[in-house]
Length: 102
Length: 251
Image (tube, rainbow over all chains, first blue to last red; front, side, top):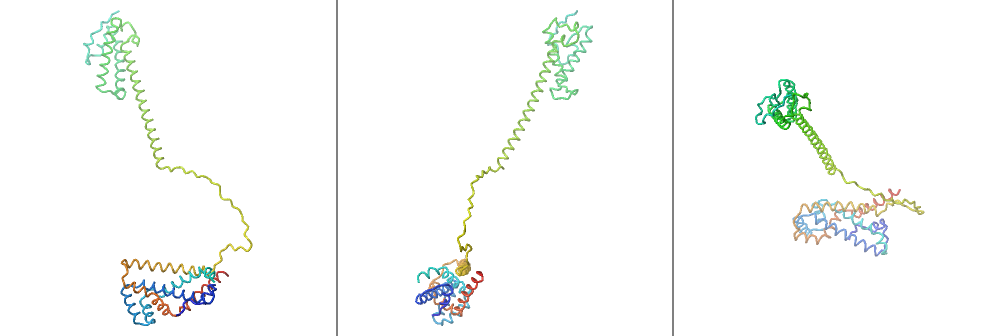
């Protein structure tokens, strides 16, 4: 699994957790980001496009699906950027709470 | 001395010459005629005034009314005074012309009363108009005038100086959380705008394929994020930019 939000990101946000907790948090954050980006992309496509995407996803590679999304999803990069910022914002606002768990 | 027999009133008419209304002897005829004529003219002028005519200008109706008046008072006066009415032995003054004189006095009194009444009516009309104008002004002011606002003056808050604590940083310090919160707020606004635009375009409910695709959102998201390429680097760039921004604001 590729991390989009890394341990370095957490350190720069002044989040200090034990190693085990860091891994757990990063896994949760990255899966959450994938889910949010995927949900937003799905919402932007009409039924015909969704039908094509579902069929493509069943037989093509992840890279090919990514390429299709890059081509067919309006505001592709903006969606990813916004969802990342929103998640990082939520993370930053909860730094104290996260650190208190440690 | 000649005594005058009073002629029967029925013998007079509007056509009767004035000189016949008050009979005179040849000796007094001139005096009496002048006197009666003068009285007649006064009656005629008075009648003209009563009828709303200008002095010296009288209508035929006024002339007839004055003659009728003179006939009436003359006959009545003569009948009342009978033989005692001796115009020829008395000077042509009011004292010896009781009948016409009294009648003229009554006429002038009536005229004066009428004038007073007319003046009172004019005064009343003037006062009524004044009152009406006043009422209209009051009514207009009630419509346009705003109710008076009574501003109750309350004691203001007491300004009390409070000594700030040592090392107090009253000015808010810009933190990393502020930076990411701002970026998140901007991103949320853009996302909301996109969603609103989609709602406008799609009024119908989503189909079954939508639910199927939504269940695969995580896979789509992962593919998108990997396609986006160097995302980890981008995330790092965002954080680095945030730290840089914090440092520059804090400097």
